[in-house]
Figure 1 (cartoon, rainbow, N blue to C red):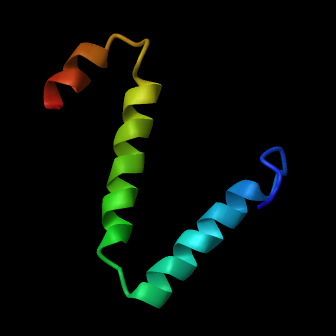
Figure 2 (figure 1 turned 180 degrees about the vertical axis):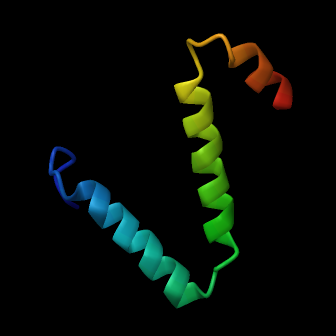
Length: 59
């Protein structure tokens, strides 16, 4: 295992995920992970704004 404080650890996780998708032919996981990341980013960025009540009604 790599050291968690290693700056390349995030890149290593992405590389391992990409290798998993290629090897196991699990291409359907890609869009699911992408949408989940976009939704979480949307929630985090609008957390303290006036738009937050409108965003939360979508979910």
